[in-house]
Length: 156
Image (cartoon, rainbow, N blue to C red; front, top):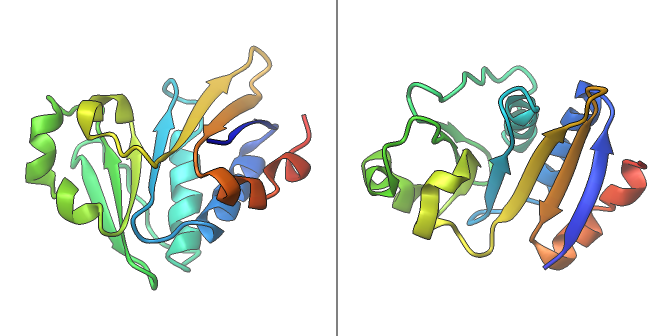
């Protein structure tokens, strides 16, 4: 597994990272976003979805109340899950989790997946420093993550 830590100095940097990762994403991938409220997960998700779906004006509502929003991208279906209100992993079947795994899944609050957490997922942990700068810890994807040249694009 590859571990990378980067600093995102503003919202535009978060969007740039999302676009870079979208370019390396393929059917069957899972991106798991963790971090406190207001850490940048939704900004990342919106930029990722717009890039992967190749639609800069794509409406990306928060799936907080619906739990999942599905998008048809040119390459495959993308399902954006927000599991904040999920009662437990047994409810994922009702949301179409198994079918969604054939495409790309982007998951906020993935700790609620428990045993259903995809072992090959890219884990993206968001933290916010006292000065408001976001620090991300990325874990997974091995050579694909190395190939994205993230460290060079986001110097500390």
